[in-house]
Length: 498
Image 1: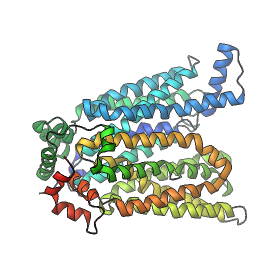
Image 2: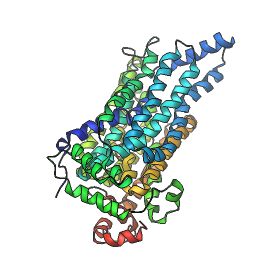
Image 3: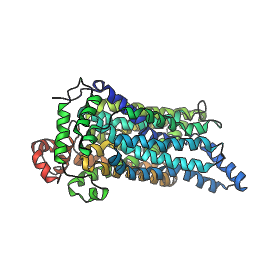
Image 4: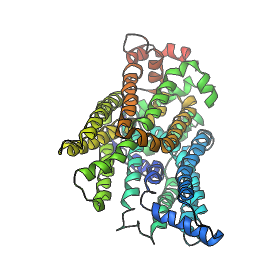
């Protein structure tokens, strides 16, 4: 028996992916990019608040310090949210966790809308903390929910949709921030509060969708609820008996096994390669150089002859490139495979960074070199979106069984938020001292991560979690680890201490 042949066989699953995404990882991407446009207006509000309230005119370094805190407090909220998410999704369920999480998003949006009338930049700080908390929980809850709602043959496509909504969030933050829309002195609070509308949309629609079938069976032992949710999500026209059999096999293997903690995840030797893979991929996601590429894109576009007042539209072009290539990744991931996309992405990005360093060095000597740099920037964004950005975020859900899944997502998202915070603090110093040679640092991360994926990460396409977990345990052997995992499935249950 086979499962769904394509997403059109599961119309409610498509709706579920959209509703979960628009109030999930969309917020993460949106709040990363949304402050670029209204930065001058917010700093003006900070100056006016201090002058009216305290009679104090801020020094430039004082204003810069407050602005840096407004930007970075989002990462602090995200880190708190990611550390809390593993417990919350296990205790309350994936769907209910997403529903409750909208309270933080809507409250943060209201604070941002009222910050200008109230003449209080502190309200923006609190709002950014709440929005970070919302995004931290969303990255885990959204990813787990949609992955567990999808049949095996659509798992890769659904997993990439998480990154697609991140890219969409970044793009909408850029698009709505232009002066023709909300990037004006009067409308910028509505720009910052836009995520409240998407949170409200999820709040009123998500209760009508089913809970994750895997959560109902494996965490709640609700077999009837699992079957009912699967019938709704996968449509009665689709034969999904094999999906149910695989879930029941995992349920039998996990019988009597509780959900593990993060500490137990680190101490469990049977999952050490999966944990190492999570460390490598999530660390490189932040240290691959994407921020440096976006930063130098403005210099490249200027050198190519684009007027300064048109640079914002060129920036929209890079954002649109990331969204479109992420959508393309959805279409090719099931035929290409996660491992191949990661390997090709890392190696292609490494080669592109090396060439980009060379073209930027020669930019002042050869008149046509800026055009080469522009092509390399778009090529790098393409490789990033169709590789690490599209695949990494869903890896904990594919590498780990249900008992380790929540702590694995906690570890992965914590690395992501910590990396984002560190890059935000250290990256300006790196660029100041190394300039475009900073790309060589990111080249090293991409190159060695590609080698690690090739030699130490098995393909997950069309394989169950039990087969993938067993394959990691057999990575040291010369035989095909997935083939051995299928042949040795019974022995797996003993060796992995389930």
